Length: 136
Image (cartoon, rainbow, N blue to C red; front, side):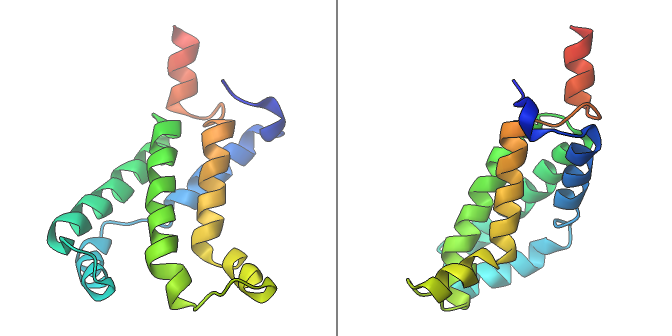
């Protein structure tokens, strides 16, 4: 079920899907292990490849528009953990008005909001999901 007021133009969904998927790539595997270790996350050797592969697979699914909503939900979870464990502590965000403004300027928050938009709006007409639903 799509919410029609969230998709005023069909190309907006396609553009947002393309912008979202340009953020993740396959080169993040070794970087993720090092980053997870530096953050003190237990089991970095296991979690880093899992998170990197989740990001890569979900980004590809969103790019082609297949299982878009479940993939966006998975990436929302990844972005939530990234905000809580890395982005907010790194920027020393405090509970003040200035801290709130700094929080909303984090790129992870923007990606989370765009992914949440995809969860509620759906993939749009230019997706495999739409074509598969039209056939059935």
